[in-house]
Image 1 (cartoon, rainbow, N blue to C red):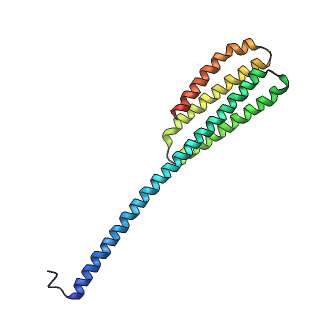
Image 2: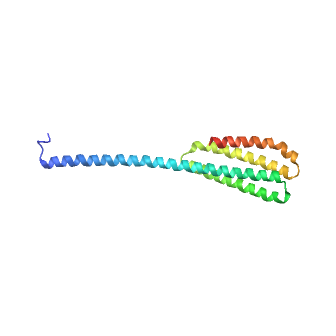
Image 3: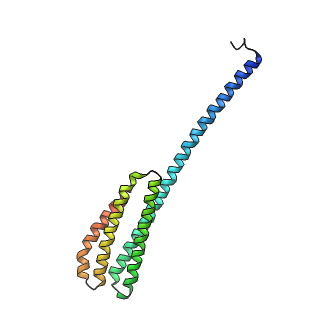
Length: 166
C-alpha cells in the first residue's frame, strides 16, 4: 500500500507518524512531571508537619519547665515573672497550633483536624492543672499542690498520648 503512494504522500505519512509520536511523548512527560510535582508537594508538607510537631513539642516542654520552676522554687519575688513566661509559651503553642490547623485546611489534610482539636483540648487542660498546682505551691501550701499533682500527671499523659498519635 505504501509502495503505491507518491513520494510526497509517503513523506507526509512518515512526518505525521513522527509528529504523533512526539505529541504522545510530550503528553506522557507532562503527566509524569505532574505526578512528580505532587509527590514533592506531599513530601514538603510532611516535612513542614514534622517541623511543626517538633516546635509544638518544644513549646509544650517550655510550659512544663516554667510550671516546674514555679512549683520547685516557691520564691514569691520570681513567681510573677515565671507565670508570665509560662503564659508566653502557652500563647506561642496555641498560635503555632492554629497555624498548623490552617495549613492542614489549605492543603486538604482535613483528617488531621480532629486530632489537632483533641491536642489543643488536652494541652489547655494540662496547662490549667499545672497553673493550679504552681499557684498552690507558690502560696506556701505545698500540701494543696501535692494533692493536685496526680491531676497534672493524668493531664500530662492525655496530652502525651494525643501528641504521639500525631
